[in-house]
Image 1 (cartoon, rainbow over the protein chains, first blue to last red):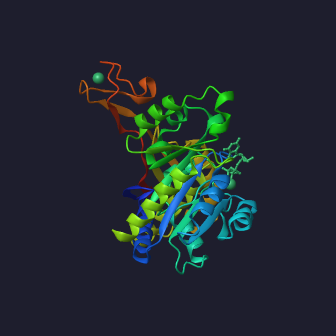
Image 2 (spheres, rainbow over the protein chains, first blue to last red):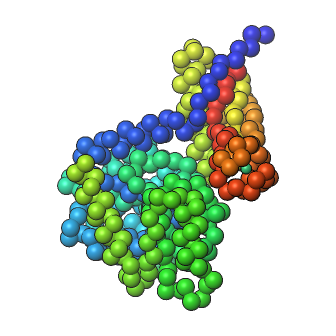
Image 3 (cartoon, helix red, strand yellow):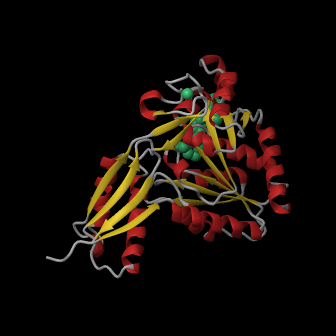
Length: 224
Length: 113
Ligand SMILES: Nc1nc2c(ncn2[C@@H]2O[C@H](COP(=O)(O)OP(=O)(O)OP(=O)(O)O)[C@@H](O)[C@H]2O)c(=O)[nH]1
Ligand SMILES: [Mg+2]
Ligand SMILES: [Zn+2]
């Protein structure tokens, strides 16, 4: 029998990804590209919101989109058709999230000449994507009214990694017991520095506030 | 199911360690998994079996999971308590100003060769 040997490692499995993410962020900074990581549950309105947002901003910023879906390309096609901006599908190979390496591969497949803003629509899921730094400058998430105002309490990690929480589908507020003030309070408990913006992607209400926030963010990133 | 992604990270890190130590086969990998890390040990070991057997280095290599109990600390009364049992509110003094001391780990503790 060979001798048994124990080799101590004591290393977080996320350490390597965090390093990749930091490297990617630094490179994007050098190129003047702002990367936004957009997360939410399936169906909360990421694609609908993005279409509205891009149509408001596309004259002022050069935008590209990466759509992460486990298997289809419907979102990427929709973005291209409804906004005219460059949009590609990232295949996650069955994975429930994207990490910095997959994000980098996606960026390599985009024509980035002159691009100011890249939005990454992450896989619809409130748990897994929160664990993996993609290299984005900011994390944003969408919580839609039918999901309930208690989600910040149930998915604390997701809310604590996001700089922006968009509350979507405000048009259906009358039909749900969703309390906007309570939701703001729940977000604040998890993450005091997160900004909360209520919108209705269906009608476009509030999307201007979102556009203002993003425009300021992108300009700030390019200047600093 | 982010366990599969985590398994790929483990494999990458173990391969790297094996290269550094000039090891040709690893018989076990020992993980420290915190109770509130959102990793389900059963999913992790299932994904592990499937992915590890594809690697010569990790044929029949066992993934052992050490569960690290979650403990929170209260800024109000400076005492510790079990996170899973009591949540965010301190059971000693009722303060909500508490934070996680440990129990969030997803780390490779050691490899056995
Ligand atoms: N009532 C209402 N419906 C909305 C609103 N925004 C989006 N929806 C609807 O919600 C459904 C899902 O919207 P998507 O934009 O596809 O959501 P998504 O988050 O991109 O979904 P996945 O990519 O599948 O995770 C669609 O039927 C939208 O029309 C809104 O503000 N109000
Ligand atoms: Mg979508
Ligand atoms: Zn206390």
